[in-house]
Structure formats: C-alpha cells, structure tokens
Length: 101
Image 1 (cartoon, helix red, strand yellow):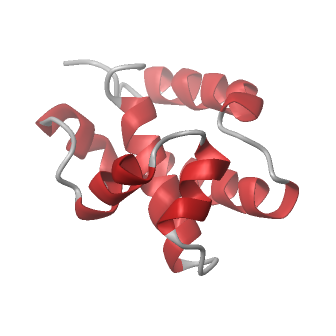
Image 2 (cartoon, helix red, strand yellow; image 1 turned 135 degrees about the vertical axis):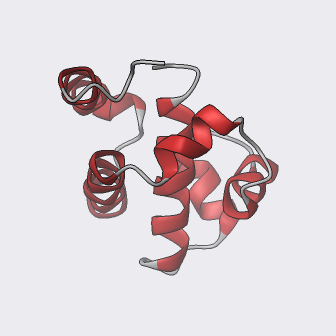
C-alpha cells in the first residue's frame, strides 16, 4: 500500500489540483507537503514503478483521488489529514483483490 498505492494517489491528486483547480506546482507542493520537483515528477509520470502506474488507471483509486483533491482544495486538508480515507481505500482495494500480486 505505502510503496505503490499512496504514490499513485499523490500523483493523481497532484494532477487533479493542477488541472481541475488551476493551482501551480508550488501551491500543490505546499498543500501536499512535498517538494515542487516531486510534483513535477508526478505530473510527468517520470516517477514510479510499473506497480505504481498500475494503480494510476484503477477506477477506485481515481475516485478517491478526485474526492481527496476536492477536500484538499476546499478545506486545506493534507494527505496526512485524510489518513482515514486512505485506510478506507486500502480496505476497498483489498476486498476487490487489487492488492494481490
């Protein structure tokens, strides 16, 4: 989960915040508490293994990312603040068999 799903989630949330909410990379980096170069990597899909990329196209992960991006934008919540939702996502992915190798 931490090695593959959370990085994919960060990538998707970063893209949503830039594309849907017109934030720049510096603003997104501050919201997510990462560096601007990390956001640049997330935007260009240069960072991440094949396992991470597998989750980028997962419908469940994309739905959670959209919801989290909205909460981060509207309420200023960090990913850390959304830890319960990340746990819910993990449970849903496990039940759906998405975390199996």
